[in-house]
Length: 64
Image (cartoon, rainbow, N blue to C red; front, side, top):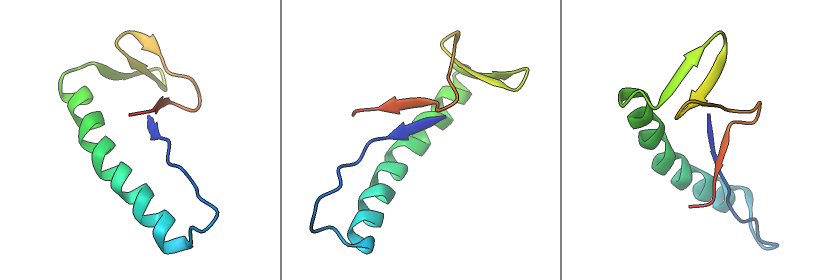
């Protein structure tokens, strides 16, 4: 439903990158849960809609 973009640097190792991704996951998971509770995000006929607009196959990407 929601993807966060994370930078990847030349000197990153797996654990550093995993920590960066996890930090973003902890930020966006509650955001998506709130969208569901507020009925901004709905599922209909196997498709996801956010604020009435159908989300594409790759969901919504956040630059925040």
